[in-house]
Length: 397
Image (cartoon, rainbow, N blue to C red):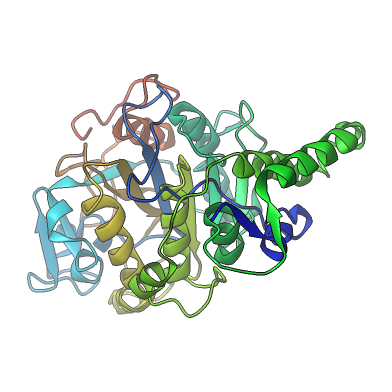
């Protein structure tokens, strides 16, 4: 199919409503050749647990028979990384040798500062810097699935033209990119692209006078034009829906966010963030609250995504997944700990840990800070530059 429904197109370019589409969805070849920034199609996907991540998911061995209900029977050792089974069960066997625990000593124990600081490098958006460094073939280089901003409501300024685009409904994305749904009254993609380009030109004067308030319009129109310029390729919607157990296209729960993340990875997006709220788990001294949250909310969608996009596509692309939150949960009351570790999974990673968590949920004084995490992600993405400096976690990637 070489066209999209007029309804789907209008929905897709309805930037005022936040419905912005991604890039093409490749068929059997999956993703076209990326720009020279990386040696293969590459995406970094951040799973952010808004409120804080318990250290049992990044270094459970520190608490065996002492805290958070950890025993030898409810954890899995992946080389040098020991992970609570609630999360370990979501990691396919084929990639368990590529799981690392990355320490982050940021010294921040309040949510707002942690959420802001974790996503900046100096005064610039770290995710957009990374997306720009990765490059890639996607019309959209950076996306937030199921939301409109980074944690704490941050909508970063673009970096070298790379902006953060919200994906809140997969129907618009699928229709506009793949032409997957037959519909009457079809709109021609080439003509539509010219129309949007004309609208962009006509609005340039107004947008230039209101760069901040109309930023989403400017970025959305550019993304829509780039999307319509991509060739239509087949996409099996029924198989996709069955894999994730979807009943609709709204990105309104965590499993849908991981499904949307797959769409963006397939389309060549370089950076994707999927957030889940409610992780400020005070009083969870047994760890059972977070175990249940992972098992019921996180594991199903994450397992499907990792199986399809990391394990099953390892020879076709490089997908790096980082799971972290504001900070770790402290002892004895699962409060705020001024450090954390991220669980990072990818084809270039090794089973190892840096900044190992101790029995009091502390990390060594020489554990790298926030910049070190982004440097590690850039190294795992195999970018041809060092946007955040040298990688202090070179034992991992």
